[in-house]
Length: 251
Image (cartoon, rainbow, N blue to C red):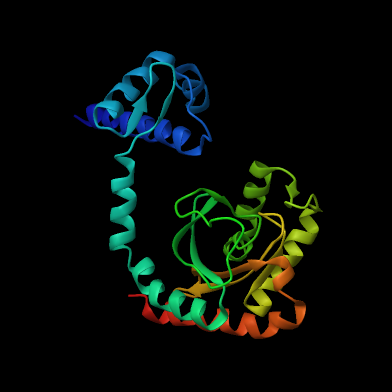
């Protein structure tokens, strides 16, 4: 029985590995490419995909595979039952109303982050801030979440991601990156200009758990040309207040 249980768990882990490959892909993938990225034999990968396809977690067009529509059900269930997402929404609405900017809340997942709630402002963005898309930790609002990570974790993150290059082409050295994380911890918020998306700017602050660690990050986004340096102090106060309000609502 113990060996049977281990085999079942290993099969589950492999299925999750395959799903994560498809989640990270920007386009449908062939069987051989999925197997390569998941580190599995082609035959094993094909069996896993067949099961996932029957459950509509994967779709197959005869040549390539992609995530299936049924994956949306899990995402909806998370958003509907997440205490953090539910607690944040009215706070984001108030922040968007007072600033006119698009507001959002991010959480860390592994070496990435994801938007779990968003409220549009009256000043439109040039892009749609994606809910559920895998976003970097080393750029934009991700830096606020990275600031709470241990030094060895940050090293692992940077080893995996390689050189830090902003959307405007700036190369950020590790020394400069670590100095910025220290500044975020010290002042309680972070600012980004043209880091993840060219021409965009943001201010973000951490949502604190009862133990002092960061549960999430609240962010306001604007066109870089609209976010003048003289506005940052006042805006950072509003964002920090919003993050504190979300913290107080956490169970």
